Image: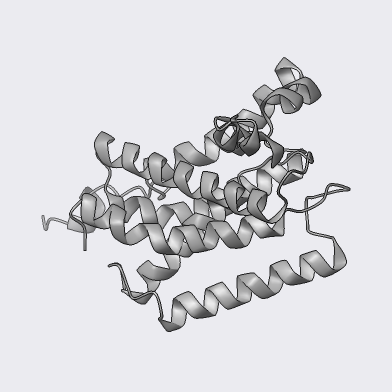
Length: 217
């Protein structure tokens, strides 16, 4: 009796999620963080852990980071989670999937977010308006991803077509947000478009040093 290899070999099951674990973990942290925020006291949490430009003058630097884990609404958190998953996936694969690599990815994400908030604070020095959300950090992932696109999986040049194209498009979108004061998922909240632009620039510039530290090319 002839052996039917196709009948005997079980089909290969495709994984439900193909994104690397650091990207999935980030998405869970963003969305789960907002659920936790609501469970432990919503507005009180924002009042205590959100960032405002005046905090830089008063030495409250940790708020640069804590604000990244807070969001103003479910649409805000879900949108940031979705974009984070999309742009974190190529970057996490580039960094690697070991625990050490995941930690480096987390540091990169936090650094982009903190610099995005600093950029906003510089342009709004002394103001008391509260800033929350992962958008600046996610913009940093976008900037880094644009360099990976330029390098076809490696660190491409800063002045490349993908970086300039994605950067220009992101700048144009944010200028429209600034002009019309509206963005999907923002509701009645003011959109900190300046943090988006600063985060993108941070991601573009930081990828090279991080890649060198991790001995990636």
